Image 1: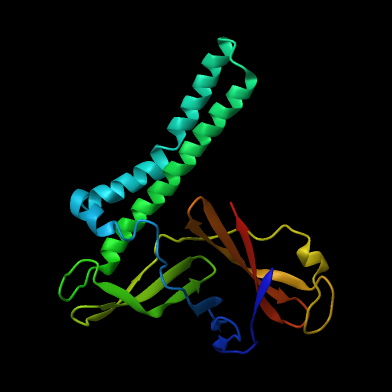
Image 2 (image 1 turned 120 degrees about the horizontal axis):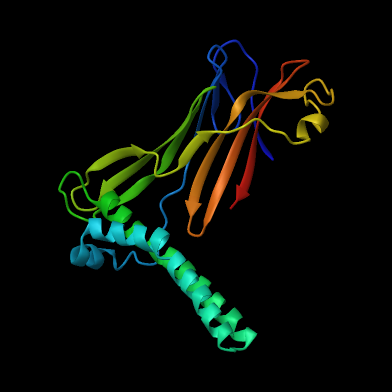
Length: 248
């Protein structure tokens, strides 16, 4: 578990990491930090031709199809085929190959769907809002990410900065970029029974003083799940933020 340190005060508190600002009166945290540029992807060079041929809406629809609807088809077909081959006396080793092939085709479908979705996103992102030329904009500054956490809600906003290579128009665009943000459940782990307060040194001192925040970020075949928990020492009031990471 990584930590974002906090300070204690009666007003807004700015932490040393990730610019954590805490408002005690409303038990609200505002966490801001710098993100990364959108990276290149496999079909980027083909994106203009694909959009010109099929259109952005169809490309996006193809992306959804291959990401969610197509993958179960080869997997289901492989199991049906295995059942038929088994009843026909086909060697067991062939069953394994058929199932593996079905799973591989399903995974390729997910990868293709992700690439097609990136093509549609790239077309929307790189169109200049000044001269309206497609695929004209590039990011000229790293994005700013703002997380707003209250006792009852959690939201994420990403602001990216784009500049047109033709007319020089600059624009800031904000959105959640498909990141799932929600409130989680309080911890049931043994961490709180073992943790020692870094301020007063007492054992089993921390308790969660707010429901944690959970964000889910999809990356190809995996989803990164980040759980941010808020702890306070019941003896001295020292506070800290812990971030748990896992992939599913």
